[in-house]
Amino acid sequence: MWPFGWKGPSGFSPRSTAEQVTEGIDATGLTAIVTGASSGIGTETSRVLALRGAHVVMAVRNVDSGKKVKEEILKEIPNAKIDVMQLDLSSMESVRKFVSEFISLGLPLNLLINNAGIMAAPFMLSQDNIEMQFATNHVGHFLLTELLLDTMKKSASESNREGRIVIISSDAHHFTYRGGIRFDKINDESGYNSIQAYGQSKLANVLHANELTRRLKEEGVDITANSLHPGSIMTNLLRFHSVIHSFVSMVGRFALKNVQQGAATTCYVALHPHVKGVSGEYFMDSNLSKAGSYAADVELAKKLWDFTSSLTSPM
Image (cartoon, rainbow, N blue to C red):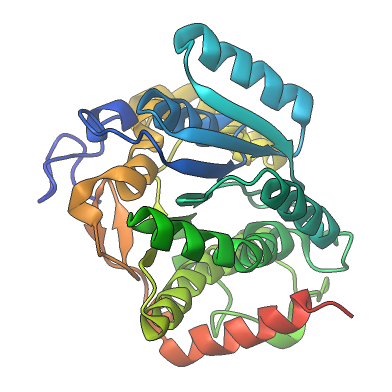
């Protein structure tokens, strides 16, 4: 991470906000899906993309919450184009339903922002019997991306504008289990550690972006895929750890980013012309950064892809 007040090569720093990193950028004509858009950096990402002219589809678990966010954005930006659609990433059935409904709208798709996530949750299984953090943070987004890729490819070709897939990871990907991904123990409650399980899911996000990049380049498709660390931000991700949440609430305004700063790297990677053609990279503070050693493991990325494909294949 760049020291908080220092600017990196991009000209931006940890203090830069989402509005600042997209200043002067016209996103008119672009359609974006933002998952987890009803709170935190997902809300700010949606607001700023809409501010720059993009048509934003807010993919949210709670539609009522999403509609309230939409109303607030429209108060500020009356001409904003925003839709709210239901999506529960912990359920593959919900992911498939969302994609079917989105495709039925006949919209293009230029930007896919895989933002939603849960952090350090106690052990539980998803509707598909997959450990909840891995299911929500990685598997749901993997399936969502796969099902939307044809639409993105068509949109990139017809519009002659680069498609961008932005996957929000975390520097917590350094703090995963030994070996990176516990393929044979994803659902093992006895060896479960909430922090390491979160790290595992965030490592999976980086590996997903890297392997997706490799495959898109092989096809010669004009779509990029990058992952990023948004920074340490005070959001409701910490709701499962009351003690940590209370401590962060006290010191956060002095040591952590606010939501406007937290959404900056996402918006930078999604819209900035400096990122055109850049793919398979890891960003932090609106600058290129370096992910951990497991994240650079090409064979691990391929193995994860095959493993996740098997989990998401219809029975």
